[in-house]
Image (tube, rainbow, N blue to C red; front, top):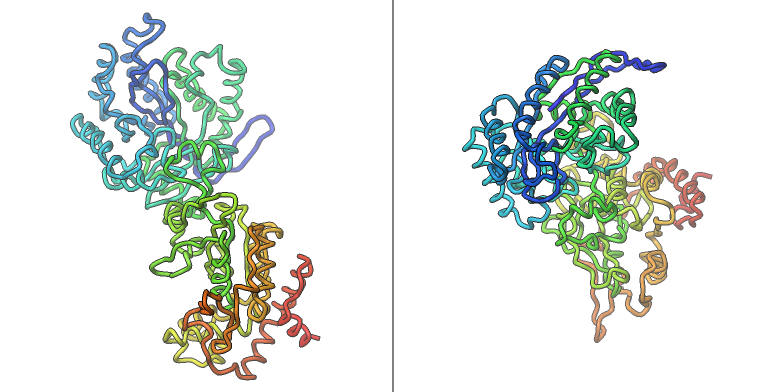
Length: 615
């Protein structure tokens, strides 16, 4: 790998003058693979293995031996410009000694000089990991490669690996990450695919399963770019890229750049060596950059020191990008993602809405969670780091993708700072439903909910003490206060969701109307979702005077109602608390009314009443 560290420097090219204070890293990797086929295959890094057959046999004599010597010579040459520059060689042991006599001799030369290079494991047979549908099969392949490494004295503790064609790295194939950890204790890998190949400037890193994934860059060399005079666009295009063009600025503008090349770039006209030797020369001649090498794990830690905000991934739908779809398991389907979310907030009637929704023959909810019951709580909690495979396992494969509507209800999504962005990246076309009641009533209901669950702070402190607690109050009291009050900042939270979703995908339900006239509300919901057939809730719901809310009407006059924990009776809020909360939420309610006017949505009855107090 070739690593470049950029210290406090000035970059000069014609009229360009920039001050740089961040480190820059530049890497080249080499993979040792011989493929017994008639064509070259793409592989991460640099190929030092090639087809067993060649059209021009006179060029084959001792080619592999010369390539080995060229690697050593180039490594020594670059070390004069790049402190501790070292090629990082990847290996697939299945192809050892499967070529011509000269190629096999080249294998032995490399293995006789193990200490000259860094090494990392590739797949044993160059198979794409996403084609393995169980972890044990991947583990078996990796164990074969590890045995090969141990037999030939290849270091196995560098903590770095790559997968053929970026397969399994992103989109994530969980089995690959688990197998890497078990067999190799991998700590770092890299890919061009996160979040997408293009535009390159948006590539980022992330951490998953404690494996650091770094962004990889392209350098304009591919399997077909093997002759200088036949370079696409002519030789001047390659030289322009090196001498102040795209490749040069890739190094300058990216804190760390990892490049991949191919064996064909190191045979023939050896464009790989030509490109990077001349790039290093140009960087040294035209900038004050100091270039140096870091081992892979140190490199990754340095990257996330510079970009800690990139540690958390942002999952996307693999089917929205053809390249992602091509390296995603064919046993998986993107159809198991929800078409809409009920986001809360808590204590506004979301469970009642959930019950009404699943009555519809075309609307299907997630299966229950053993910990959070009907709520998956994926986008707002650490469950998100489990990945989309974990999330989709909660949903069935729809029998009809067009007419079936998968959904989930997680009431904590509403006020979550992370949920809107995460949801927008994974399900950008999903529709969003929220329910609003008087925020004062919502706060009081949450307090009583916590008391019923024997929350120590709720049992110890009165509601007035909770809502009026100051900054020096005990931490458990302030935590309860936050859960009572903050979700009621309705305008703030809705605007956050509207940052990532268009207004046409948001439905705001009047929680009071849902409680008193659910059939009308459900007609509005069906129209908003575009679901069919139309379901007649007027005939499907009945009011239970004993429980005090609407229930599903079953056959023979039986009913299905919310559980005992719903509709719980507790003392009414006292006037002192009501007055405090009315004042506390006054500005928030005014902002909500402005937002609803802007969105062209009617004001809920409770909001109109609160605004009367402002006047």
